[in-house]
Length: 472
Image 1: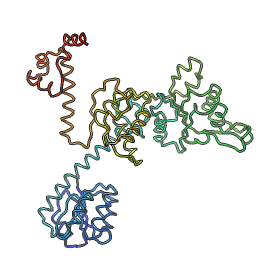
Image 2 (image 1 turned 60 degrees about the horizontal axis):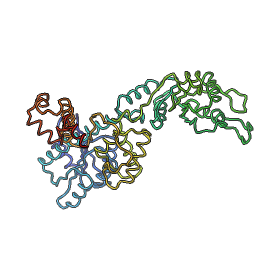
Image 3 (image 1 turned 120 degrees about the vertical axis):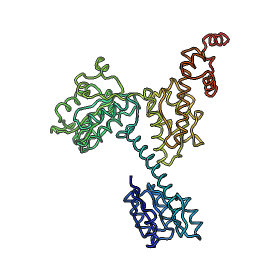
Image 4 (image 1 turned 60 degrees about the vertical axis):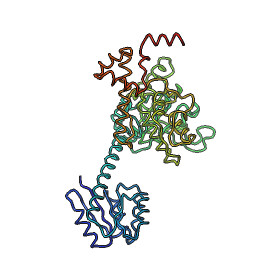
């Protein structure tokens, strides 16, 4: 992979000298003679390194480095200074410069610094690419998750996005049904109109028909002007009917007629108005059961349930909790709240909680603890007292990409070894010899590992367990 280097100096001789020293087959070098031009090129194109003089026409070297930092440009700056500019060199390092070089330039030191900076830059680029890849992998149209159930939701959204069929989105309150509707709408490139949402359970029954279809002036008391309904507002786009199960039976019949004929009339009107609207519906109730109980029209149910998308509750996708937490933390930071992190113990407790309020409850909790916790790391004792883990969290490879690989490897190895040893000890009822034979290790190695991980073999011996229970 070619590495691009930008040299910035108003001295032509120094530029030529640097070109000769830095020339290599895998490097592409460009020269700018003033800071303003250099900044324009950095914004327009990607450069791995910027080697800049301190004193430049237009923007000077320090201001150039400051702009690189403020704009978060993916480039590594190196400053060139005279021997009388030590203070400026120190200031440049504070602003994010990788290193500084004294003039006249020493060719050997220049090559060493540049080679090291390029290696570090390459690693930063790879980490950034990996993070971006992970974000894209676990984020589809603002839907977040890496669990198999959420991957299935992503796949269904992608499959139905370009279709005209109605979609019924099923899920408990707080699971993100409206986000799924937004994802379908925004992924559908054939739709030019807006996404219009209406909560069927939040509107009084006498107002529903007017809200859906609009009304003519004088249609009823208080109708002092013509009003367009949601079907007209969403023309050419998508109409999202949230909590469709709350719709009264009389209104269900009128909605079914519009879906079948693609026309409607405003309240108090006689003109048939055509509509080009894709309908997405969502509910937290079991519509099939509602049909059986006579609370929902069977024909409307079949009309809406052409393609069902079931959103899993958060308790069934514990592996998505860290991803969602990170998303909420980043969003809070953009609002100006402190940037904080959750400890591993806190994440484990949250992943084992049942989340009756689902993703919405998690979002509110994250904001609450960010606001009320004084430290930068949120520990378990910062959580509300009612929030306790109710089930064991399945082992998952969740790790912080900002940490060094050996640290992550050691931590994950310890987790695997501890879980493995506990299961083997349980299988052989605490017998070290059988455990060692099963693991392919010596008794001494097994004993050392049990001590390291704080595992008491007596906990797995049935007769000792019974004795403790009797004493208790």
